[in-house]
Length: 124
Ligand code: F3S
Ligand code: F3S
Image (tube, rainbow, N blue to C red):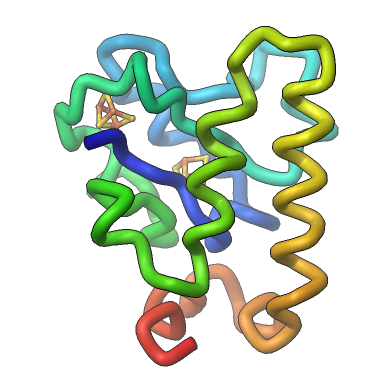
């Protein structure tokens, strides 16, 4: 099962995960044009080989090791991860729309500092 980036990445976009990923499945990278406008980064579910390197690399614990382990409050972001690099013309916009909807529907999480947001996932 693929790994999933969730909302502590919003407002952080640390990119340490990109640096450790052996298969370049996390995007957008800092050298890609979408980086500045992307609200968060995304893991391509079919390219991820479940190596686990990204989880300890993320300073805000944004990454879960499967869809199943992704908390209920974060489930909509599973689709955003999957969409981002499908290559369809509107894929990036669709992924970003899901993230913006997530932000709008979870003001209680967005009010928490990204460093502490993952700890709040289990309560939300
Ligand atoms: Fe997947 Fe993370 Fe490795 S995205 S390939 S588990 S670095
Ligand atoms: Fe985001 Fe953490 Fe990677 S903040 S960019 S998932 S290192």
